[in-house]
Image (cartoon, rainbow, N blue to C red):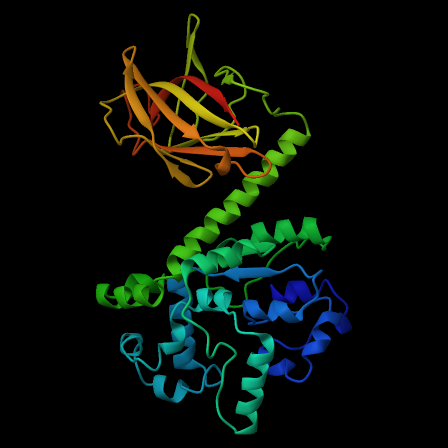
Length: 383
């Protein structure tokens, strides 16, 4: 990513510093650069221009931590504690309180960094003068999931190492960058076995404890990226006239375009039409709504097997909501409320259902089926 970004700017427009220690005494110059990149914490933004747009790349926490510990073992330049770690196994390092001290929730700690920039620089300068070791993250309070999530949501571009292409596409469009034809990975080893598979249950548990905030933060980042992609797509569909924002209550015609995913084509017998969901357990209904109004969704459906309380759950824009399930006409009806507070400024709504599983209903039909939806109605409740 750094190689790619550097290629989008002239050399004099790229800040040469990649860690806080390299900007000491030159903090006021950062606003003059077009690109500042490196292992910087969130509080560096205090020194940047208000026009700067920020990017963060997260990595799956267990793999990130294990990779860092392996570097600690093998690379003398990686950390001053290499001499201690080089003759130890990963299992031993995980049980060494000093060696893992700086590997606890690393990504959340970077996002939660809140000390004033002047205080960080003063501490680093003092350490340099006394020839002692200091880090830009020293003196920070322990990270919290809520603050890390809020900080992540404030960042313009959020990407995952495992899916780097999606954030690159967003940046290319938003920043007028040259689109890359390939994204090389400097340490790519496509045939290598996942190292987590070779770890004991006890070691994996220690690894998870080191990432008790980073793991849910990573899940949040994945949902945030999906949500941003959803909003962009809905904005384009509404802007092009494919989707319209209904003025009041409305019904989705099951024989028309189905706004969502996880649906099979329409089936019909006489005037009765239905759509099976599948092949996965999740399906969604994605619609633009009036952002200042609340709605009640009524969904009539049948099931290939017995259906009981809790067998269908739902989220509205990633927030779990209560589903009221009632027996109706040899089938079922699901009712749920979409509060206007869940819709956001543009009113885009993704209702994601979970059927708990799918099944093959007959030997003649190899499809995996969830539920057969017969009717979807949005009742506008007003403001």
